[in-house]
Image (cartoon, rainbow, N blue to C red; front, side, top):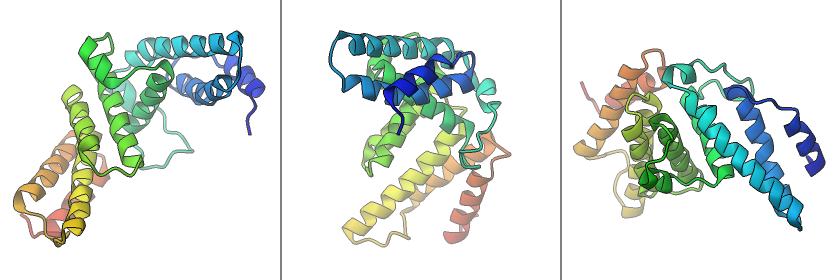
Length: 223
């Protein structure tokens, strides 16, 4: 287990200059704040405040400077699965940075902050992913992924996951309500197909939306 002293030593060694080094800093800052918040006295509280302010600065000046082209050019990580898309990784970093900084999506949208549309989209998608990981199949994830699309309509990852999550929700509610989960109504099925077709158009080299689209059309005998 990492100790507070080790985390403090390692985070001081990180010079944040790009996405990759910011990602390293965030991975150290999150557990370090956990250690510091369990301690008593003014010094830990000051350190936590400094980490939160630093995360906010990195959010605006490092992550916030990336555009779509910069984001998709981020070098892959060996410890992440090969199917993880750059936007997913970017969204994870944005979620970590906003969590440390204490920034909430709803507040930022209402306040019309300086955070750009790609950051807001990534934050909304991070919230959607958190809702999914919590086991929720409510409308929360779909609300946030639709918000993410509103801010970054050119990002194929968002359409792909909205399609998959809508399908999963249909299956879940169908089982609860005693319907056949394999027989979605035409309007519902059309939304899954439409989103997958958009994802395919926006990312011709990404195989997952293509495979899912072909499977849906085959299963439901669509043209």
